[in-house]
Image (cartoon, rainbow, N blue to C red):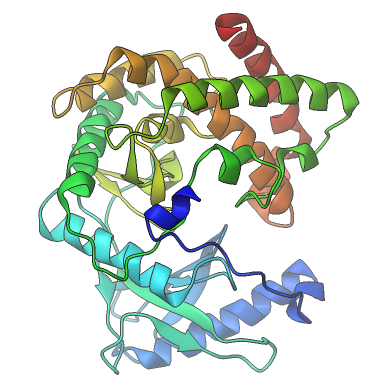
Length: 351
């Protein structure tokens, strides 16, 4: 399999535990207790405490000290990434920052000198991996803002990240997921669940989605996975993972970084907003910035709509597999239904 070429580790099969059967509120309470317990492993000011920022694959907390200093604490989801995979993510993130490619959050070592802490809780079957980061200044951009300039800057940053990924000598133990057609939209253990299980799916919607997925698969098979097109990428450059600080664009949350198509990184910044009228203009701004560092071939440019469509359907699956969390719940069936005209447009354009 292709992922073996890159030394990619697949998520472990994690059996259901007592924790999984608890209510969403009870789970959040336990994770908050674990987060505050984790703070004991770091040389933080007395009285520091954690408050939930968001819940996605992981639970992320803002840690505040009485003197006003802040950090970000990430409690990893059980079984999504191994400790080695988390260490791999951090290794790339650290080198990107050290070499000046892009500003990324700096991980903080615990009192024992380890960057990744294992924190147990009496109501969890296994300890959770926890990482603390320095707090990065900046604000999350909103789709209603004028994002032309930030997208141009992001395009240039993304190209620099791709250059770095091609040249960087990865540690021999480096291991990350592969995000290709099969692991995204395939039926055999896709990373974020099956698109067929999307919220509000019915027979007619499945048929339209299936035609779209089949076309995506055919086009990506023809496009191929040559080293000039497929490699180590961020995989999740959506607005929530960007910070605008004056004219700088910072990149956070490398939790889904792995091996995928470079042009997939053009699609993820418009995640959840693929239907908005300003998207074509934003993609043009992204390409303008990217071309300041790297060329975009005719074939690369032609497939950006394919990657936007792949990402949209992948997110339909993600919403269904995370429907207990607040943000996916607010999207629900509306996101599935909003994808139908995008499928129709894509089929008209490329069939």
